[in-house]
Image: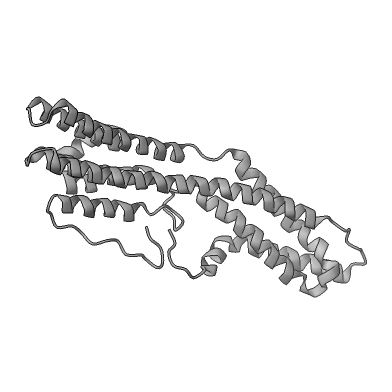
Length: 291
């Protein structure tokens, strides 16, 4: 996620420079043709066409941003649930290996969830936090976060069987773990359910068609300044198109991603401190991007 109040024009240019270069070359070609060929370009309703495209792009961008914000909300719910389960371990379970094991597996769950959404391997993080045995248990399953959650539930059930907690206290743990599972399901739904193909094809097609028609409509008015004016207007539409594409997948591990690594570090810091352990520091932004 890009942080900071200053606009990142350089980032926008880097992402759209290829279609922008093609658009500029087309603008130049239309201008040259207009100067040397005695053909009058037809009047085109580009203002009406551009307004319709702008409305469509705005609708698509709003839908994409809703996905991005829901992803951030779900991770916020996971952070809260992680703190809740650590508090339960500290106040309900007596001092012993069970409480520590649950907290460390919860931290591992957050890292495993991050890796699952980004298509990465969480083995190293699970081993570092919960130990090799927990990493082996998780590796046996396709859904490693779910395996860790089930392992936490097993530890809670074992504590109840040993008489360390009663059934009411066990239900408190299970209630928090249901919240964690609901957050996980929401994240997986966003990751595995893309926007309908029409949201991708239609804006792309009509935005590019608009950019092709734009210099033909402007050349009579702008003449030699057509490449500048048409390219600047086209840049606005191409940037809006790209923003919608970037927000569609909030777990794509790009600069526009929900900052999963930062939130996992937040969970790790809070839960390790609840155990009285030394915790790492917060993740700083890298080149203006919070990962």
